[in-house]
Image 1 (cartoon, one colour):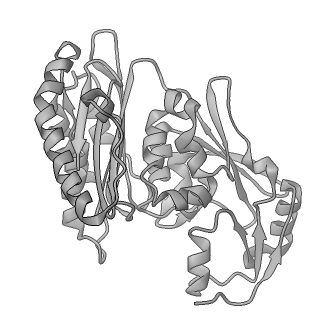
Image 2 (image 1 turned 120 degrees about the horizontal axis):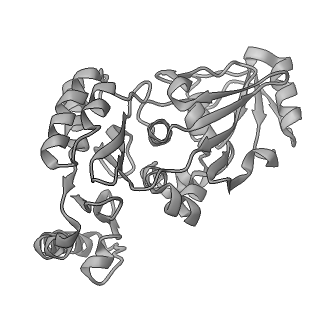
Length: 351
């Protein structure tokens, strides 16, 4: 597998890169981390006559918190988001979603802007940015515009980006106080493309009722079902409510059928993903006691598997530590997560 012939360009400034795009037009493609574009070129599904490498454009790698908002340069590596303390503290759902992207080798090279511009329907960053209501800065040699995440994605691998434009920066607003979050994903194996994923943000008022809810699913345009968000608003967060929201949400979505899963299977996964189990804060200790046998049973099974494959990476010596741990084996991942994102406390256990 080799790409068709192309001319390589290596700009060092954003102005130079935009000038090249403006002059070369439809025949040119920007190269970010190369985790999507290069395989497509090798298969000759994409045949640019000019490749504009953005890796030396330092202006696109700036990554900082400014005036409460997270500003992410398009060339920021996904691994930087995953390891960032600022992201973990201010935008934990973004860190969680990033951790699901392929394997660590992919995240070391893959960029935030590259994933968003590629707009693959199973990708994690588009759905995370949609639920966070991020804003994208798009620039060409002559123009500059800002586009909301909800308006950026058109369909599968299609965005509003013009051939002469580059996504230069992502701006993520701060989360409101008393906001909880969840990101859930179903895949055939650890590191595989998501069969279905969902991101949820819930903000509670002083009475403990849901003041604002955002729900976004993976798919061709990172859909946000308005009926589900409306149903959540004004109600108290309870398991029964979440189950009803799941039923309502999947009626609005149109997942695709492919070799990995049917549309019906994806709808079922959508419904399962959105259901969260809620418990009162004062019962957190009791909850830990209740789930401890389940956790130890799962870890015992993982350790038995380890003795066969000879590889393990288990972190944490007690239940509270295990709540943040990930035990990873060849093709096997067990996750135990305890998130004190809002009151009441919620936890979810997946394997």
